[in-house]
Image (tube, rainbow, N blue to C red; front, side, top):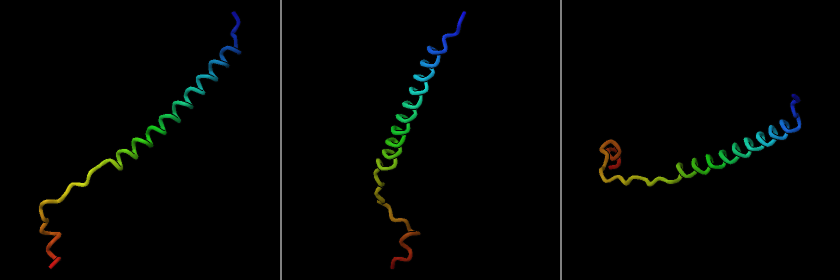
Length: 58
């Protein structure tokens, strides 16, 4: 029984290409998610006055 090295090499090549493409795609998606999470928040309005902050304003 012979090992067909050409077929194994082709399959290994495509597996490596698939892994590289998947990693690059995940990095792009990670960057998009990080940007979204960093920029997609609303600042809470302060309705109550903090006495520590306003003590020296007079």
